[in-house]
Image (cartoon, rainbow, N blue to C red; front, side, top):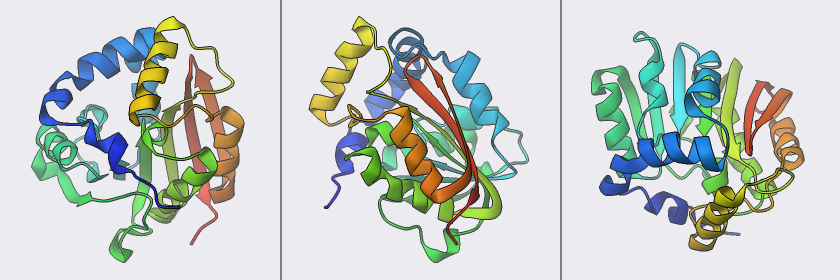
Length: 220
């Protein structure tokens, strides 16, 4: 089945990216998903990021600005606007590689087994299909890691969590527009998808967000 990954990425125009930090990182995370950025998401990102790091689904580059300056960074995103905004914000001199890429497809050979860490922050819930479909995305991320590398990420769950009125409204609108595809995503299906690609998996649910970490990739 062909995945229309462009639907979730198309929303990130130069205009919406200017509002992203306020709307997503401040308002939505705090009040809709009940997983505050500064208290939960940012510490999780920083804790599980290594020296050589690949960020997949870069947004505005907010999280990357909190990494040590000596980190070697690579960016991958389907949206050219996001790549440009994130690179400018982090500093183009800190970005070693940048790739416009559909994560449902494997990375080029020169990107595989190259990174100490890979992040998938707020990407999975924007991808089309069920969590079973998205398992291939996790596989491709795992293939970019060194054997001792670590994957981390965060995704908004649609099932098995308690959404408040604000969250339910956003979920309905975003899923209808194709910005989200996560109504059936739950902690169990996420754990299954991660465990298929990694032997060591941890998930912590805060509000309606699953913060995950995985190491010891099963894929070569």
